[in-house]
Image 1 (tube, rainbow, N blue to C red):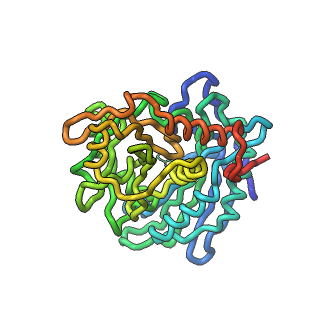
Image 2 (cartoon, helix red, strand yellow):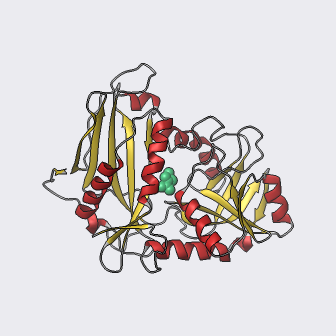
Image 3 (cartoon, helix red, strand yellow):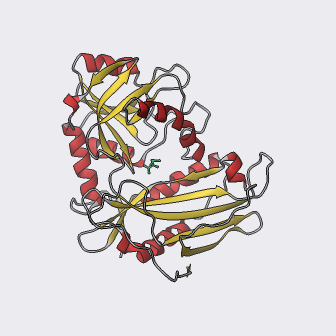
Amino acid sequence: MQIIKREQCKQKPNADAPLGFGHYFTDYMFTMKYTANEGWHDAKIQPNEPLRFDMATSIFHYAQGIFEGMKAFRQPDGSVGVFRPDENWARMNNSARRMCIPEFPVSVVEEGLEELLKLERDWIPHGAGTALYIRPTIVATRVMLGVHASTEYLFFIILSPVGSYYAHGLEPTKLLVEDYYTRATLGGTGEAKCLGNYAASMKAAEEAEAKGFDQVLWLDAQEKRYVEEVGSMNIFFVIDGEVVTPALVGSILPGITRKSCLHLLRERGYKTSERRISIEEVIKAACDGRLTEAFGTGTAAVISPVGLIRYKGVDYEIGGGKMGTVTKLLYDTVTGIQNGVIADEYGWMKRIS
Ligand code: COI
């Protein structure tokens, strides 16, 4: 793979400065182009610097774009481990099909990511709870204003050293149940990781943040009754000892951390179910003391405890506002596997030497 070197590298963030999420970016990026005539071509690593685009480039107008989120971790033997990248590539090609973007060759981006990580390994942060976040993205690059799928695309991967997604770290989050705005509907793009889903969620998020909440808990678009997801995380509840998460009905992102948690719980003998969960059921269980835990799962959010939900103006505290035992078990196991301190029995970590 061609590597175009830069003259001067950036200054890395201070080792003891809090990284937050998505504020720092490494020196290089992977890029690959698509044209109707040549297909995906020109895969290379180049300096991560601003590129120039015509103002009529279709991504700016119609948001025909998709992305993924993965993480790379330092391993005790000095190697680098990436958590379940095959799952992300498969999901990204599913998103591509939904958004009329040509599927990309996984082997080429796999090699691109490997080369990029070898070049950027010094950017992987050392602190507990940190990682090198990997953001693969595809954007439509044809210069054209007609509302049609583009015939040209840019695939790129940028890297960002990150800490906790939430400013308050592992403190339980507060969620506002959103019963007016809609994130996604059946037949829409909710299960694709496309740019527009995130833009559509910002109004509700902004209103929730102004009221002191971290995120909104989305309900289904049809009845505003069934719990869907949080937008940056999938959601789980522990009700009567059973770990329940909304079934993937088409409007929910099929999370890879979600899938991993279900696997870990089933292996450990927990009763789990993926089904429709009404908000009334959650509220009733909270009132009866049967809702013992709630937590979100996601690449960025990892496993985040939920300490409070507000529905129709009433606050319901969950688990005494503390991280519960199932949440802690999952957090310790997932991060343990990612950091190489718990044996990777399932072959989830891809090693890069
Ligand atoms: C992720 O968890 O990687 C996400 O994409 C969620 C959010 C940061 C957009």
